[in-house]
Image 1: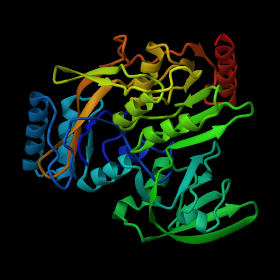
Image 2: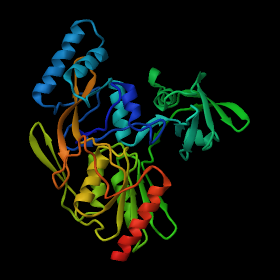
Image 3: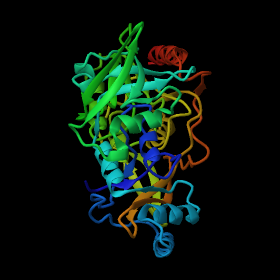
Image 4: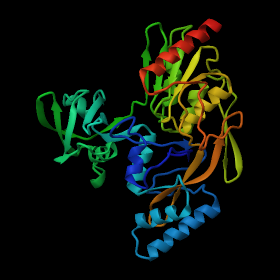
Length: 393
């Protein structure tokens, strides 16, 4: 993989938990983050060229070397170095974790194909099963309860821990390895052994609402998601509106977010950003659909590259933004290899919307705020707004 800098959503941990947290809203066995163009990024097992400001990078490298000299493991040394750097968005990956991270950016993951969530009573419920996945082939259904993984009770466990167990992170389990699930459906309880497989994330889904409105849901910006959005726009019925649902989208490849912007803009500025004080720009391609009514639906889980896209559509008057204030993650990270082989993501700058707004710590304020933006009411309000936009045309 090459030609990417990192523009990442917030981390809540330094290692595997951070990796899996990024996409728990998308898939219970997948993860991804975001990236900007220009960085020659190779496998973590190879050389990850540093694009981090020299002082910041050198300080972290020196701290990692000192920790290694003190007898710390490579990962402990890297974690201590990034922690001491004061970088609020800094994150550390082992070589294996970073390789998984890169695969996830390409829309690939190793798992069984389950989406899941933890209910208020602590139960883990299957919310979706990927078509053609090991879970689907085994007859697992939406609504089934996941009770255990390889004999370990998962009731009350964080979804991130469930992710890790399904993926086999503790043992770096590859595709083809077995995982034993304890399941429950109504009064029936059974155990099912599945074999993990290489699967593709389904980050873009399209739904037609009564009346012809098209809802394009982007769960994250993985490889190919921008083209998937453009295809969905072309296939949408003529003279109907589109709801671009970015709720819960925690970021992704910025190149894909720019491609998505290109589906609705006829060229022009998407965002500016700085790397080590050097200003850079991101432009949309010409030829997008600039007339179809468009609503961008957002919430507090809309982060990073998704906020960049929202800000561009809002600033340029292309979309009405409906929902609740977005998260507020507008900083840029890039990867750098540290002594011992681990990879650190370190903050190198910030981006701004076309009008010059900073998103970091502020987020995007919707044009129309909706309580409980994660519920069906938000979609209903978006439909109402589209109806008004259509009347205005």
